[in-house]
Length: 143
Image (cartoon, rainbow, N blue to C red; front, side, top):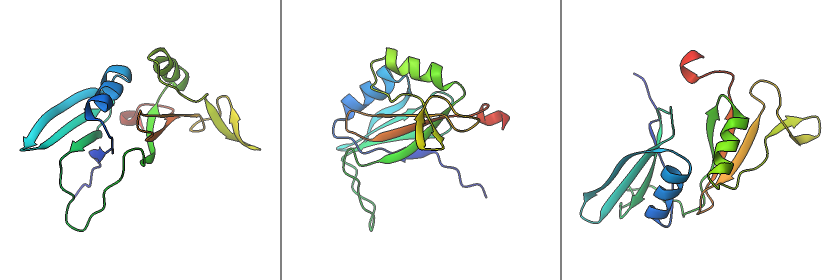
């Protein structure tokens, strides 16, 4: 049996602001924006080319025994692109505050591209949820 990661909830304080940032600014595709039960709204958005979506939830009761994250507390999610400089340029042109391209070098993080799998940048959404973008040598389907 395959266990596929397909949806990651991202805690946000304002669903419409998050939708605008991820869809209109970052260019992610809106798959769903619906009230699925009285008072329960789900927005599901997918990065271009990804098989995993992110979801914003409003009014969803926590699953018994689970904990909820506060808006802005999700960090470490990672996206991969095949051209990090082009991806950075797209984000900058869209108005996203994105870090310079960095790599891990002899003295820790250093500015500029690194070797294969060693080029990164970061950005945050309006709530402060943090994303890392890594350059991959090829599309996922080719690896």
